Image 1: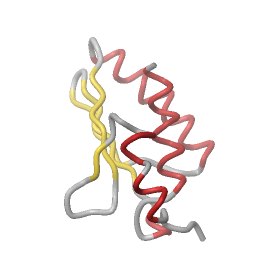
Image 2: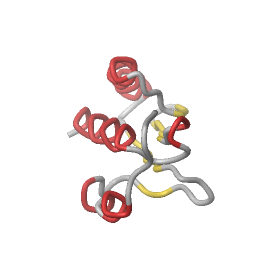
Image 3: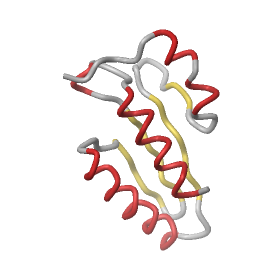
Length: 96
């Protein structure tokens, strides 16, 4: 079973993932990605889905036109885990 993030790892989140924010009322992180158009947003989702599937860790997400909203949490751990941090960083690299 995946372990939740420890206090040191939680304190480093803002530095490690500056575009991600804690979700109010949940032990999760979120980010809004914006793209030029729907096609670019959908392409990002397709690439991110392949990363998520390979990691066996799947985001909660939605898409409206050029926007993709992503929430990451690890249900098995009861909240944030290293798996969320790794997937968030991988998604960030897709748009870097």
